[in-house]
Structures are given as C-alpha cells and as structure tokens.
Image 1: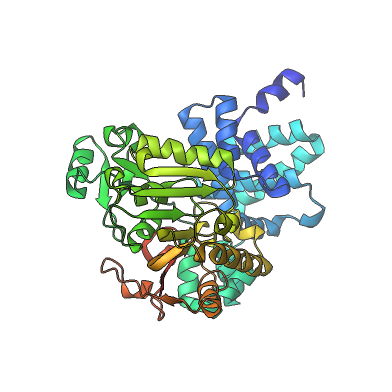
Image 2 (image 1 turned 135 degrees about the vertical axis):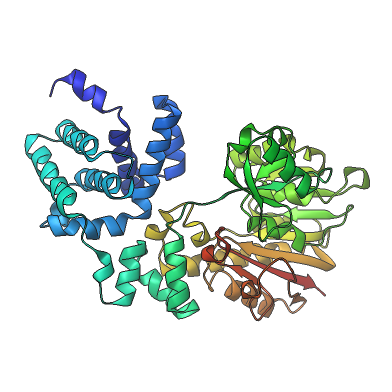
Length: 454
C-alpha cells in the first residue's frame, strides 16, 4: 500500500474508531475526552462526528456481546492482535447494529485498515471473518442456558457484576437494569432561573422546534428528545443548564434558605453547586463554598456559575475535601453536601467503559475514602444542620454501608428520611434513603441520604 493511500485511510472514521478503542482498552483513556479531542483535531463534519461517536460508544457498550458473537469464527482470540480484535468489533457492530451502513462499505474499509495497520495476510483474515458474519450473523447469545451468563453476554456486563446485582435486587431487576444500559441516555436540562416556570420553559422550547417533555422525577427537569439544546436562547441566557435528572434531586434535600452558608465539598463540575446557589440570596449573605482538588475543575465551576448568573453566591477553593475540617471554623455551615468520589456504576449507560475496569475491592477502597471526607466535614456543620451525602453509584459498600458506618462513629448525627412525592415508592430504601437504578426512569443511577446534626 502506498503512503498516500495509507495516510488517507488513517483519517477515516473507522480507522479513528479503532485507534480510540485501542487507547480506551489498553491505556485507560476516557472515551468521551478522547472522542472530543479526535473530533476537533480531525475537524470532522457533524455527520462523521456522529458516526464516530456512535461506533465508539456502541462497541464499548456491546464489547462482550460482540466478542461472543465473533467467537464462532475465531479459533484463538487470545493470540489475536488487539487492534485486529477492535477492527473486527467495529466492523461487526456496524454490520449488525447500524442498519443504514451498507456491508460493502464496512468490509472495504476493514480490509484497507487491516492492510494499513498490518499486511495482506491480516487483511485476508479480517475479510474472511467478516464475510462469515455477513452470511451467518453473530453467534446468538440468547441460546445460552445459564441465566447469569446469558445476561452477562447479552447485556455486556461482567458476570461478577451480574451476580453482585442479583444478590442485591434479584435476577428480574438485574436483567432489566443490565439491558437498559444499552439504551441511549436522555439529554436533560434543569431550570436554573426562578423567573420562569417549567411549563413556560416547555412552551418556549416547543415553539422553537424542540421535542421536550417534563422530567418524570425532577420538578425542575426537562427531557430533550430532539434538538440541540445548547443552541436554545434559554440555554444561552443561563435559564437552563444540562444536568441529569437524578442529580437534580440532590440540592433540594438540603432544604436551603436564602441566607445559608453552604459547603459543597466535592463540587466539580458545578451542576449541583449552581443548583444550590439558586436557592440563596447574595443580598442576604447566602453563599456556597465549593471545593475541588484540581484547578482546572474549579475553572469549570466558575464558568458554570458565570453562565448561570450565580457567581455572586459561589466561592470556589482548590482543596481536598479530606482537609476541609482543618480549613474552616467548627460549626460554621448551615448545610454540607458530600457528593462523594465513587465507582460511578450509575453512569454505565453514559460511560460504558466503567463496567469493565471496576472490581469489588474498589467499592471497599472508596468506602474508606468516603468516610474520611465525611469525618473531615462533620465538625463544620452547625447543630440542627443537614449533611447530604450522595453518590452516582449502586453499591451498598459505597452507599448504605458508608452512611451507617459514619452514623455509628458519630452519635451526634441521625438519619433524616427523605420525602419526595415525585418519586415512586421503589426509589426509597427502608432507611429513608433514595436509591435510583438506571432502569427505573432511564436516568443515571443515584444514591441520596440526609443526616442531621443533633
């Protein structure tokens, strides 16, 4: 293959998809960040950017399903070069799941990519495997007799995680949750300004051509089913901001008043911070002090605060939340929020690589990290104040166990059951916590608890 043709192939969507998947799988790169970087550096058209995004996320979401399906045509997958595996995944995904992409285009590009990355022998092998897929389809996971393995392969969720959730919520709910993760995530926005009701915002968005519906769980949330919301005047004017619906439930739990001093101890990128600030009044000295360990994340909070017109009620500091107890006066905050570092399993629909890189030890390690943060901030809360602890994960070690352990170590704190009539009863645990699973409402999975200092 001559260098001119080889260089041309390196800039095709499918070649770029293989490279991104290689970086995600072998170097631990974040798919969303790498996608944005490649789309910008390659100056891709909206159409090509959309196809690249669809392929990368689709392959990651269905990696185990694709590998099982391809196994009928691959003698020894462990001896196969990593990039060949990802090229086959990329090609099979398009042939099986993207009906608008013609097989001949997929096959042609696959062979050319194999020549560019390898040699004629590899190209012949890739062509042979994909011709079999074209003739016979992928091996059918639905015929697997073992239920755990069938769910694991069909939903592309590691078997140990399937077993973990079956023990926690039962096999039927686990199956619903696992397959719901393959669905496209909703784009949702939150109404930031009190100057406009949700009904008025919905009417204005519809008049501008957006397909929108009210969130089924957040009183200030709106789902976007069609239209690029960042182009909306309401978004540009800071009246709306993008935020997952389950995340929108956190700020109200603090029952904030206009003159409160609030600590948001794990604040970036600022979605919940700006929501908290919307309840406060700068003229009455209401303020959120928002912490994060990294300067670039603090910059994101400041940018969000500026766009949403609440920068006069937000003060940011670069600080590890575990050191907060040494940096502020005791009993100085009316409400403290800890949206703790966690395994992020509630985000598996949005960040599919999470499910392949976590292990059970991570849950226990993060449990200890979470306790250190809660211990650090506990002395800073006024008597009668609320401590709101939340995560975007689904594990008992990081959620219920963290709260119960903290309460056991701090007799001055008690659990306050959360009441929210806009949530289904299934979203409340016996202790009065909120636990939302991804399949409950099609949102991110989320855990919220509230404690009061006596």
